[in-house]
Image (cartoon, rainbow, N blue to C red; front, side):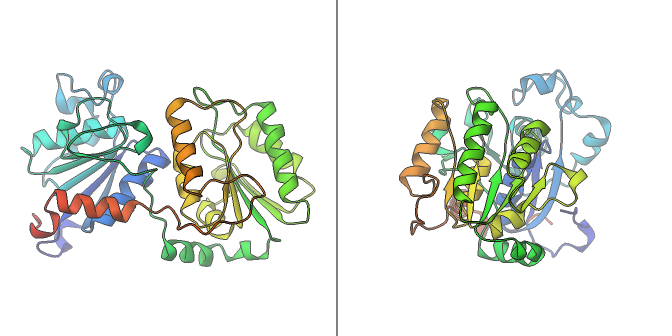
Length: 333
């Protein structure tokens, strides 16, 4: 995601900054929506300093002092036509941009900012958050770039996975969070389910995230040692094969904690499963229930259902273009 050269932008092309704190899920959502809006893209990873970061996106005195000197140099004119931020820290940055640009930059916040939505031109928050407002858009799940072309590119880039025995089970591991424990009991249930899915043969493609303890991913791989498998725990295992896993999996089994992973799995068209051994937190439970009602989340071993992949980013971008009068305004470049 390289930064553009301002000297070589087509005149009149709109400029968009995609801003996050660098967390993978936040980066993907900000970039996916910015790309869907159409324009000249630039990615910024910004991490405000304490004490501003503690209260983000609430604005404290000091403004740009929330950022270190190098970040303050980045957050300077020429201001973009649109700034898309994902996560609390990015929401503070987009608030700063709106003020410093004297509101010439339109701002969009992805995820509930936990303060009044009037500070942004639009807020995109998943439906299970229950956020309401005149400028709120509420997709079912997370935003992402996955479509047929994305999946085909991923299949081509990771064609090596075509040699793994079918059915290929993609295993997407997150980590424990408030109200969700991925402990030894959960691991045993996961392994038992995978062995049933692989009873007649096949392979496992095990993907850890930054929140996954090595003990969990290693124990999962060890328990499935009898089956052909891929195990990826981080950069020490080579290039991240996540796109290839999504593209080549015949089924996907995701841990219940991550809205991002479940949303992206539901975008592939493959059956998606999860394992929850105890009641989930209320908002997360609502999301799971909606996925199940729509046919995207099914019981392990259930037959494939004819449901359209869950791909909401284009519809959200179209709604924003209308709300912001995006297509009728010229860019500032």
